[in-house]
Length: 254
Ligand SMILES: *[C@@H]1O[C@H](CO)[C@@H](O)[C@H](O)[C@H]1NC(C)=O
Image (cartoon, rainbow, N blue to C red; front, side):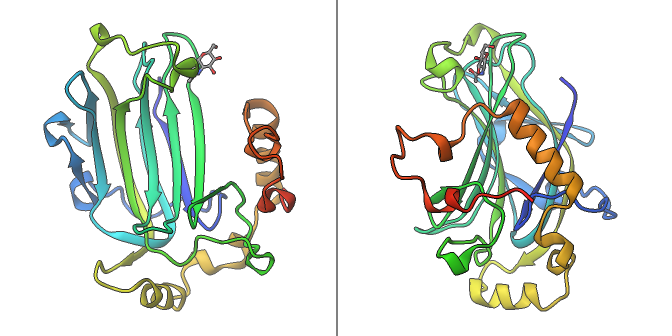
């Protein structure tokens, strides 16, 4: 599987101008937070492995508010059934915000599934528009760390948990390179309210009006993805949510 570039934006899903910042090396920005003995470094590439004994994970050294993160991830090749490789951002605390991309593995030749979980104040949403005036929380006020991890989830991940991890194919390796963070860095001890003041007074590109909504091309891309690759949308899952969640009622793509 080829390296694919994954951009995650706070406050917006659109991909902006090419990042001019140079690709910073892994250890300037990140460190292992789980199983550092399951890491292996090859030049600019970081390999993280899952075996019978442990998964592994890394996190950013700093927290950020607004901005863009780029990492190229090469998911587990071949038989990846039972494995989950996640790339996520999360703030701390009880009413935390989280953007989570989970790549659910599959048997050889079968497609990966990407599960997107956006949590704002602990509520899962998938809307990028700020509708706070309608009472819908928006993730703009908590500094977030950036994380990735690989772990065994064969109780639910692949084909609903029917396909188990085949440990004779271990170790399962996810590779990473091209680490870039173009974001407002927040000192660890700084209160979120102070970080927010600091990060919105700098005239960062994230405050530019063009960042507040998708352009025409991007909204077409989103419609295409939804039409061709989306297999589940909690907004239309009336069995699970008999009352349509409030943010879904305002769901618009333009
Ligand atoms: C794995 O492949 C099957 C068959 O193509 C598909 O139904 C399923 O959504 C894929 N992904 C996962 C994670 O099970």
